[in-house]
Length: 576
Image (cartoon, rainbow, N blue to C red):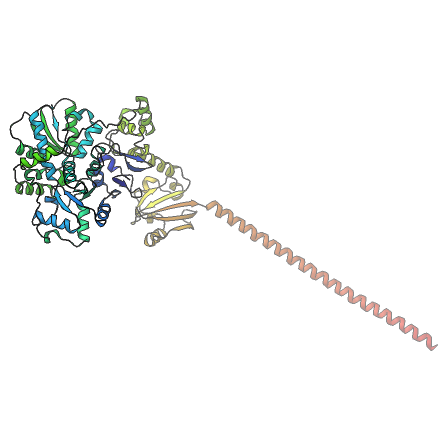
C-alpha cells in the first residue's frame, strides 16, 4: 500500500493533480490517476489540490495506538512546527497532553536539529564542498536524487533532524519505539529508507494527533505544564520556518566561512534553482531548500484556511531565542553517534520516443502541423510534445487532450444533428431552443438558425415539454399530430438533470399513419361488401324458402285431393 492512495471512484478526469505535479509523478491509467512510487517525491501537493478529495493519506495512527495498548515504550519526537500549529499556553502542556495519551516520553525533534546544525557548521568550516544544499527536507532530497542526480555531490552528507533525533532516542532507549509527529508526509517514506531503517517506527501528522486528543477528551491548553528536560535546542526550533536553518547555522558557527547563504522554498523554486546549478550559475553557496512554500509550517497536512504561515513565522521568530544549543551537550552526542548519510543517484531512465513516434502520437490527436499544437496544458503537461512523450511512456492517454476530445465530441454531435432523419430539439426551462437539428426545417418550416432564436411555443405546443420539466418524468412514444404542419410524430421527451434541460426526438410516422388509415378504410369497405353479400344471400335464401313453401303446399293439396279421389272411387264399387 502506498503512502498516498487514490479513490478511483472519485477521480473525475480533471487532470488537476497531473497539472500541479511539478515532477509529473502521476500517471493516468484506464482514465484514473495513479502515483508512480519511483518518481514521487511526496511533496503532498496532489493531496491539497484534488477537488474531489480522491486522494487519501495512509495513517500510522492505529499502529501507534496498538503499540501503546501492548505496553511498549513509545516515545514521541515532535517537530518544532508544533509551536505554530497547536494551541497551548506553555509548551509543557503539549508534552503533558501527549503523555496522557499513553506515550512514555515526549521529546523535541529540534534536539536532532541542533546536532544537524553542528554538522553543517563543521562542513562550512571545512569548506571543501563547492556548494552545500541542506538535507533536512526529504522531498528536496528525493527531488535531487531522482531528477537532478548531477547535484548529489552538493548535498550535505548529513541525516535530517528527524533521523538524527531518532538515533539519539534509540541510543538512550534501545527497547523504545520512536514516533515522529510533524506536518510532513515525506517523513513517512524517509522513515522507511534502508539507509537508516529501524530508526523511526511510525510517523503521525498533527491531524492524527488532534483527532486522537479529541476522541480522548484532552484539551491541550487545560493540561499541566510539564517542561521538556532534555537538550534545549533554542535557535534550532526555527527549522520549520523559512530561513530557519540558515539562522540556526549563523547562530552556531564559531567563525566566518566563505559561503554565501540563502534559502529557497516552494517546489517550483527549488526546481528552478536546481536547473540553475546544473548550468553552473551558482557557486560558493550554502542553500536552505524546502519543498513547501513557507517552510514546514505549511506542510501538506496543514489546513490552509485555519493556519497563516505569515503569523506563525512572525510569532516563532519573535518568541524563539537566537542562541545556539549548548555546545558541550552537542559534542557528547556527536562523539557517540555518526550522523553521516550518503546520497545517491535514484534517477529513472524512461524510454524516449523517436521524432517520428512523437509525430505519430500527435497525429492521433489531430495535430498534423506545428500550429495545431495548442500547448494549453489542460491535460496536465505544459506542451503537446511532452504529453506525446508521456503517452509513449504509458504515463498518459490519448483522450487526455481536452481540445481534441471536445472537437471530436462536437463533430459527432454535429454529425448527428446534421444527418439524423429525426428532429432533435433541446430546450431550457424557459422553453428557449438550445439545439435544433437541420431536418426540422422539412417538418416545421424553420431553419436551424431561425429556430435557435425562437421559443418552442412559437411554433408547436410546449405542454408536454413543460410537464417533463415540472415532474422530471420522461415521455416515451407519444403520438402527436400537428395538423397545421400536416405531420404526425412519435415523440420521446426526456429531462437532462445535469443541464436542467429537456431533449426531445420527433420521429415522423405520417406515412405509416396514412397507410394505416388507408388500410383501415380498405377493411371497412371490405366488411361493408361482405355485409352486402350476406344480406343478398339471406334474401335469396328467403326467396327460395318461400318458393319451396308454396310448391310444397300445392303438392300437398294435389296429393290429398288425389288420395281422396281414390278412396271415393272404392266406396262406390262396393255399393254396386
